[in-house]
Image (cartoon, rainbow, N blue to C red; front, side, top):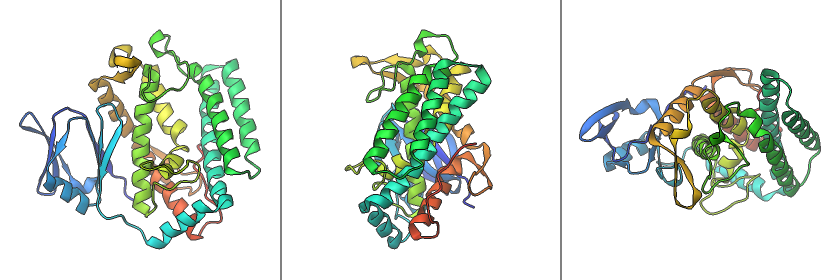
Length: 340
């Protein structure tokens, strides 16, 4: 099984990353603050005004460590990586399936089953832990109906319609999952580009981290993250990574955000209002979230299909491998990750 590796997140502004021997060194105000051996990393993510020496970029590329540059608030800007692994035959099959409407819809349907089943599990656990709630019960019932619809194959446009309706039902019940009684964390619905409230700022930032991990997982097995099945192709858009992350949104990203809010690890003072109504996290809040994200990825879970124990951070890699096996013809269908 693939060894779990860490992602180095650098959020301190004006930090400088350079190479010393076989290590990545983070320098802040002319002082070396952190040293990480390159063999323990699978990625480096730089937020905002963070720079890197050309020698370190070369070293990362040679060791298959992808380097991503994001804005200070989590908007993707660029990515530097070495040669892509995997063989061309796998990618050619990926492209053939994308051009075959029924085959593409079959993969998208299973990914969507995983997404809706996992969002329903989040609601069911909330009902179990916090008692009866009419909004949660109605949303749980609607998600069950959407899953029943998906038992029958349907065209990709219908799948996307079901996905949109299911997401709307889930997010309509999302306020009931926030147990902190604070107006600052009132949630009136999903919004983005830019997020206009603290909850959406947390969700958008965490989804960015999840997309990064899913993209890395797909590239590691040799798949093209830009050609997906549920999400349409668009220049610069990692459509397959967006497809893959759907199975993990509720299980990993949403639960982490809810935990940070409900345990008061993130508070109203951790956000800034910007011009135009945008809301962003402070630097300490981003560090709190990133530390919690890394800790959550270290937790162990039994994979529902493989029936093997693994770290949560490996789940995107395992699902990418299963997708590759399906595309090669080793598996009759793609088995989505369904949290139990």
